[in-house]
Length: 140
Image (tube, rainbow, N blue to C red):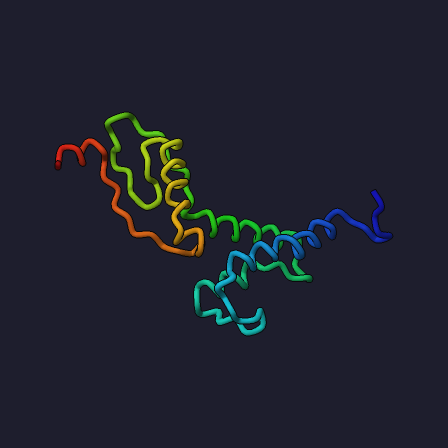
């Protein structure tokens, strides 16, 4: 592999972040139309966009912090569920934790993500009610 004269692995890592990672961040925040210099930092999405974007003069620590912030912010509502005992959902909450098992949750999320509204707009927010199948049968 040919490396530039002043190559350092830190600079290469940060350059990749600036080029590739920032592209992913901009895609995720594609609904924000303001330029980087005109972001309204009093609005949550624009403030988060600004905080996640890698800048040329960022330290390595700040670069990693920005990466962690973006990953945490974008996966916060993408929990893969949890494995609960059969017949006991305990004190679990709803949110995106649908399905008694991780497999069940993944199957549910696959079904939701196949919806045309979601396919056309990844920021689409669903409102759903999930009813246990045995409870549904009893109500019929």
